[in-house]
Amino acid sequence: MNNKIEKMIFQALKNSGLDRKIDDPHSMIEIERPKESSHGHFSSNLAMKLPRYLKKPPREIAETIVENIPEEPDLVEKVEIKGPGFINFFMTESALQSIIAEI
Image (cartoon, rainbow, N blue to C red; front, side, top):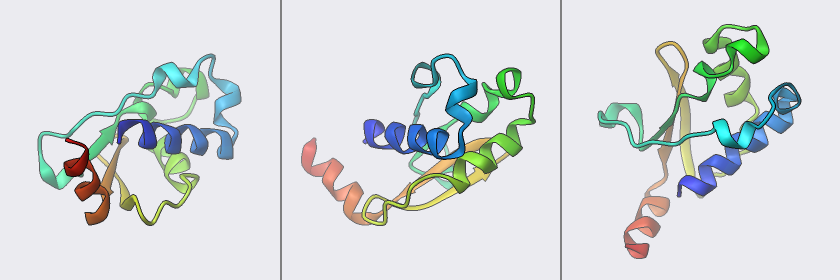
């Protein structure tokens, strides 16, 4: 599941043109499981790593990324920004069931 979300984020960077301003965007994308369920099923702090490259505040970067994430209605129910720029992913029920099936 992390790979799919990483690909979505990388595609958002490409769609927005932000990838051209970052040396190695793939290496900067990290996906983690939030401790609090209200923060989604998966989360990324990528926007907080990019201000030195993009010269913009993390929240603004997160907004650009979220606006450019490709729609995956079978995978992601919603994407939201919390705090200074955390990008939180809420997965669909069918995506969660596929994770259980893999396990």
